[in-house]
Image (tube, rainbow, N blue to C red; front, side, top):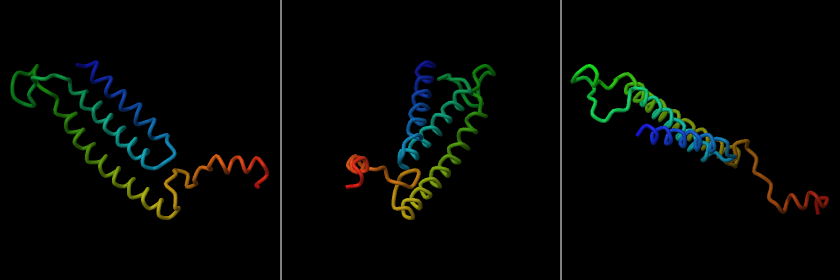
Length: 121
């Protein structure tokens, strides 16, 4: 179970970083969301992964640590606020710049590149 958990966190981290490096704003927002989910899963795993542990009740060795659970709940709220802010910021940039490209400029088409090489015909 731990191997599956580690692979899932790794894939989500890789996918989040890959999407954050894209040139458009929507993949960047999705990448930030995936990175925050991966961090939440990592924080949650620090409280031990056991299926039959209780939060407070039971023997001392069967406790599930409540601190990572509280940290994950806090991170979910902060992550939601951050993603909402980034979405509004990207919508405003799209309205002001007329482009959803991260740097504010549209990439040039292949035809424009060919015309530029020919001398602007």
